[in-house]
Each structure stands twice: as C-alpha cells, then as structure tokens.
Amino acid sequence: MSLTVDKKYFIDRATRIYSAWEKDDDLKSLDSLVFCVGTNQDELPYSKSQSIQTWLFNCALPDTLLILTKNGIYFLGSDKKAQFFSPLESKENLNPFVPPFSTLVRNKTDKDKDNFEKLLGKLIDAGRHIGCFTKDKPDSAFAKAWDAGLKAKNLSVEDISLPFAKIFAVKDDKEIELLKHSAHATVNAWNYLRRKIVDIVDTEKRIKQSRLAEDLEKSMVNVQVQGELAKKNILEVCYCPIIQSGENCALKFSAQSPDKLLHFGSIASTLGARYSSYCTNVARTLMVMPTELMEQLYELLLTTEAAIIDALKPGRPISEAYEAGINHFKEQKPDYLQYLVKNFGFVTGIEFRESGLLINERCNHLVEKNMTFIVAVGLQNFPNKEAKDDDKKTCSIFISDTILVCEDGPNDILTIAAKNRLRSNSIRFREETAKSSKEVEETLSTRTKRSVVLQDQTRHKQTNEEKRKERQKN
Figure 1: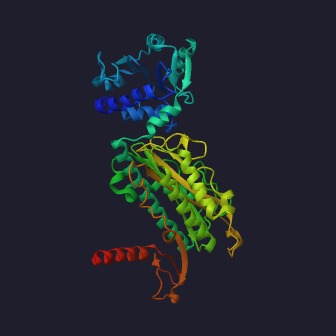
Figure 2: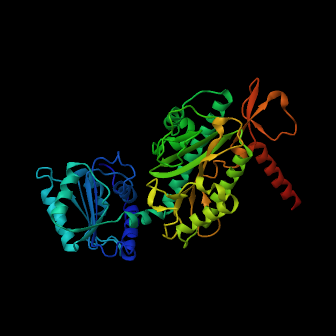
Figure 3: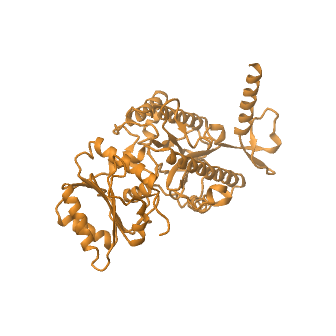
C-alpha cells in the first residue's frame, strides 16, 4: 500500500476517544477497546466497526484488528496494511493523551495464533474489562478466529455502541465541510427528481413508483446531476430513494417504493447522498391539486419542523425538541396527532441513522454544538375528505432536512436550498385559454390543453423586489 495514514488526522481523532474514555460513564470502567473488522464491510456500510475505521483512518481496512489500551495502541493486519501505519509507530506517547502505537503483521502460516496470543496478553495485562461493538458480526475466518480466542479467555465484554455514537455525533471542521458537500449533492438530487415528477404529471406518464426510484438511484450521483461533486468518485447514495404516493404510505427510512403506478395526489420523496462517507437527507412532498386541508397541514408541518430545529440547542435534552414539535402541532390540529410520525429524526454522519440518538420522548442525551441531525416530520395516511376523487381521500405528507447545531443563533439547515415552501411544492393544472395577468404562477411546461404550474418563482422574485425597495428606502 503506497499511501500512509494521515498522522495528524489520526492523533486528533484518537485524542477525542481517549478524552471521552476518561469522562463518559459508559467507558470509564473499561480497560481496553477492541475493534475487529472482517471482509463483509460492503454488506454493512453503516456498521460501527466500519465507521470507526473511516473516522480514524479515513479508509476501510478489512480483516484487521485494532486494540486500544491506556498504555498502548496495537494494530494487526497484512504487511501492506501495517505499512500504512508506519508514520505512527513509536515507543513514546503520540501526545499527552494518546499512548504509543505498535503494528503486528499477520501470519497466515499459523492463522495468527501467535499474534492473537500476544494481543490477548495485552488485554489481560490492561485489565479484564473490554469494550467492543457486540452487535457487529464480522464474517471472515480471521474475525471468527479472533472472536473464538477472545471468548476462551472469559473476559468481561460490554457494548460501546452508544458512547461511540456520541463521539461520532459531534463533528469537527473537516467533517462539517464534507457534510456541506453531501447536502449540496442531496439538494441537487432532489431538484432533479422534482423536475422529473413535474414532467411526469404534466405529460400524464404512467410509471411505477419503484421504477422511478430505481431510475433516480442510478442517475442521482452522476455528473449530469451533480457536476463537479461527482468527479472525485466519492459520492454515493445513502439508500435507494423512497417514492410513495396514494394510500398505504409508510413514512420511515426503511420503507421501499411501492411497485405500483405513481399516483397524482400527494407524492412523498425521500433521498440522501453520501459524500466521502458522510450522509445527508431530504424529504419533500409534491401535492397535485391540493385541497385546503392538505395546504393547512403542509404549512403546519413546516412550522412544526421549525419548532423542532429551534429546540435542538446545546445543553438541552434531545427529548425537548420532540416535545416542542408535539406541543406545536397539538395546539393547532390535535385531531390529526394520531397520524403524526412516531419520532422526529436522529443524529446522522458517517452512519446514516444513529438509533441510539433519536428525536423522541425517551432520548435525554444532551445536544452539543456541531451535532448533525436529520429532522423529519410527517402525517401518514390521513383522511382527505375534501378530495373529489375517491382515490385521493387518503394522503401523506413528509418533510425532512439535515441540520447542523450551532452554539449561537439559529441552527444551520444544510438542505435549505431544497425549497420546502407550499408554493414550491403544489402542482396545479391551468387551462391555457384561462391565463390572466393577475396570476402569480410559474409555468414549468406548455401543452395544448393544459400546463402544470407552481407558484414559487414569481413569489421569489416579488420577495427580492421587496428587499430592493427596502434597501432604497434606507
């Protein structure tokens, strides 16, 4: 391997681990930390074991073992992988927090038996209490052999997923830069999909929701959609986009796009880009000929999302943001509370969804500066009695953004460029012969009998005009 580890990058991240080790109640009692990665990392892109490598090394190193004790750091891997860490090899502390770093080269002749014994000895010398990601199950012969050796020593093993979730949650400047690129890519993908859906509605094209999602997955990270962002080959999708319309929508990130024709009522789309392993997400709902109730509920979800985002401030429990959203919604539409999604998002970053840090009523972990959240609000399968067509009498609306927690002032909505106003997401039909000079609508395409119109562009221009006049007054 010709490349070598970025020494400063590694030491900065390792320092954060050792600092947390001293302070976090879930880590204090542990004598060592063990991270074993097998060869199935492509199947488990969001595993903690994969994440720790990306976070520490800025790359993936399959079939390797990393052990941290208070007195030393030990890496076991192939000769080329061991060479990757040559800048770190030292018999002295790397800094006041980080102990010396040593590498061991794998020996396939004895299937690493001697290496494992040496490392198990280090663990026993450090103490018998170790932490690892117990939910990860590496599949390779190397990983299984290590696991068997570890179990044979009868050491006390504890899961450290949550304390490391909290470490990963707070982003440094480099991570924030990557997240902003990721958000830019997510917004580009949404704008592309938005134009495509508008064209489908305008031409009354018949297409399955699953097919539209698959087409988007193939195209959303290419140069035509992403421009320069796609040229470094570090852009990928977080998951297959989810596009749902009509009845029986499931507003969750594990849902799949139905294998049914796209329904021209409410069209909820959820997608996310992953740039250099960092995830962002956006969800938007395009509504075709929305009823007054749909418009009211859409506007309410926007203000509910804003209330949640405003409540995610440093030093306050995550659960307070959930309560802020619930209380805001309940004040205006208590009868529709039963249709509201069960939680309002989660921490994101290297792992798309951090299940230990959800925005719900039970999560009392404190918000910290530079945490990133995917905030999501939605109403699932609510009755829309005002609809004229029977097949439009059940609707769903989903809105989601990725935000960065700021210490002072409002939080930074990284996906704000994906317009979420009602005017930007309402599709109406207009007879070409019925045009009026009083209309404030944007014609997206022209047809002989009718055209699809949105209202956001003219509204945006008016807003800019108002701002210009205000400046002239001053």
